[in-house]
Amino acid sequence: MENIIASAVSQVGDTHHEAAPRRSPPGSFVIFGGGGDLTRRLLLPAIYNLACAGLLDDGFGIVAVDRADLTDQQLRDNVRAALEDFTARRGAEAVSLREDIWDWMLPRIRYVQGDFETMQTYQAIADVTAGQNCIFYLAVAARFFGSIVDRLGEAGLVREGPDTFRRVIVEKPFGHDLQSAIALNTRLLNTLEEQQIYRIDHYLGKETVQNILALRFSNGFFEPLWNRQNIDHVQITAAETVGVEQRAKFYEGTGALRDMVPNHVMQLLAMTAMEAPISFDADAVRNEKTKVLDAIHPLAPADVVRGQYAPGTVGKKAVPGYRQEPGVDPHSLTETYVAMKFGIDNWRWAGVPFYVRTGKRLAARKTEIAIHFKSAPYALFRDTPVDKLAPNIMVIHIQPTEGVTMQFSAKIPGPSVRLGGVRMKFDYAEWFSEGPSTGYETLIYDCMIGDATLFQRADNIEAGWRAVQPVLDWGQDARSLAFYAAGSEGPEAADALLARDHRHWLKIG
Image (cartoon, rainbow, N blue to C red; front, side, top):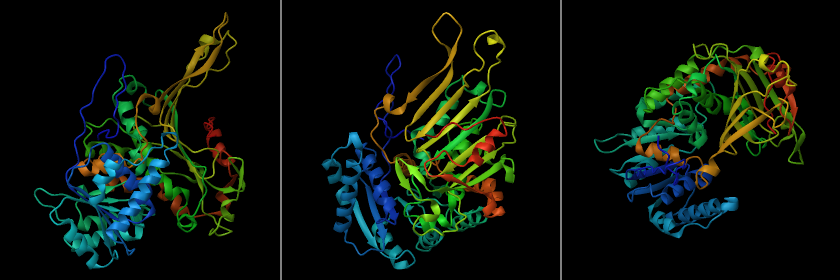
């Protein structure tokens, strides 16, 4: 796993220089769904950033595959428009599209028009990519995953040679429950070897998520504290201010639990709780993550809160409730919020609850992991005005800002002993001069060089689904659906989930 975008290294004392990461091998990056929104907003800008960083081989090429009737030139015009939009959306750091990079990319963009189900499409892809390394990116609806891989196999497009590789990147959602995830894994593995499959989770492309492992295992003072003797509980929050937007049809059949917990949230939990791997080899890391997920204690109904947003105010703007959104059933029981209490049955974490929450239309956009350490004894301060110490909390901020905050107590200046809570903060934007990214750069590059550390293995996927399957088995129940005003901190029932353990959530807004 290599940091591929950083161009500067933090300086503390002496100056250190990293060796420049190697260029990708030559080959074709074939995007099924090459005319879609994911390609336009995220994949093409990520490839552009890799080109700007000098990480793409001169033998690199893009092959977009889609149903629309386009010429190569029309596709290239669309790509340029997407990249101009990306560079202009950088806010205060908005820049113009680099013409030297565009001139390099232009002749390397090809288009294949065709239906994903017909063999003629795959023959056309074979003609364009003959003898090359290939990465096939499935930027399509989940219903096409199995059939595209079947056709790739039938066309001989995933057959590897002594000096060539063929890899497939699969986007989420990877199944909609445990049974469907197992079925999809089985289907893909009928055609591909496990090492050819790269199940992507864009959360793992964020620098702070990758930094969880570096933070824990490269700093000797964390390991003695990272256990049930010192940590009281852990909170994982993935909050959004947006509503269902234009995804009502998708969201009605999915909900917050399926959309976020088995993949994004479980990955954050696993990286926080895993044991140190013997190396940063992909399988060594993924082995430890799977052990954590397999050790999760079965959920009980009292450990889960399902919520749905009602009308409210977000950013001083009145917004409708979920049931009033276009395309949503006015009696929908789909949850837009879920809070859960997990326990991990192993020696490190037994008795330490992991509280997770995710939802839409909340008070702020925020993804973070909060490690709450146990309180110090108060006896030393019994005869002082201090009646409660500030809790010791380490917060790993993932989005929208990336960094780490430490909260602890310190003496307030003055003749008497008075304590106040203070914070130390590390912010990526302040310490590292990195340009804006999509979060996909690292993941795409890692797939190119064959590093699967940040991608999920079949057993990782299935363990995540297995942890939440009991909730899906209970089914939707109007009696268990807690409503909350849009723009709020979430339903009161989620506060009660922690209150019964004499704890409380950190504020979102």
